[in-house]
Length: 152
Image (cartoon, rainbow, N blue to C red; front, side):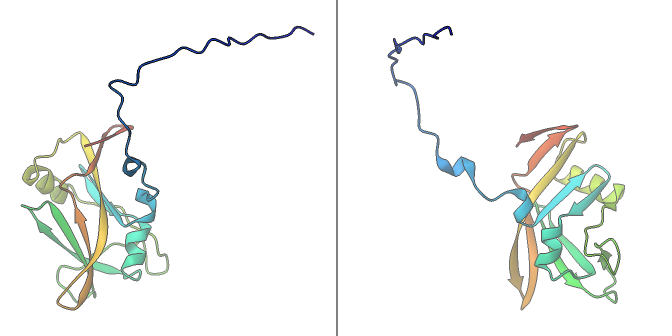
C-alpha cells in the first residue's frame, strides 16, 4: 500500500489587516421563527408566526407610516369597515397571499422601492390603546430580485 505524504511545512502568514467577525452577524433567530411580512409588486403576505402572534385572528386592519416605513397590523372583526381577511379560510390557520397591485404600487411609490424587487421585514408585538398589534419595520428590509436574495 502506498503511503501518502502530507506537506509538513506550514506557511507562516501575517495577521495584519484581518478583523474579527462579530458573532452578531450569525444570529440564531431566523425569519422563520419571528413574525414577517413580505411585499412584492402585486401583493403582500404575512408568515404563519405573524398569524399565531395575533391568536390566529381571521381579519386585520393595516395602518402605514409612510415616513417611518412601517406597517402596523391590528386584529379586528368583520364589522370593521377596513377589515382584511389574512387567513386562507376560517378552518385553516395559514396565511393568505393577498393580491393587490394598487396597494403594492402605492407602497413602492411612497417608499421609493425598485419595482423588480420584493421586500421582507421582521415584525414585533407592540401595544397601543390596550390593544396587541404587530409592527413591521421596512426601513431596512431584506430585498431580493428574481430568485437570488441579497440583504439591503
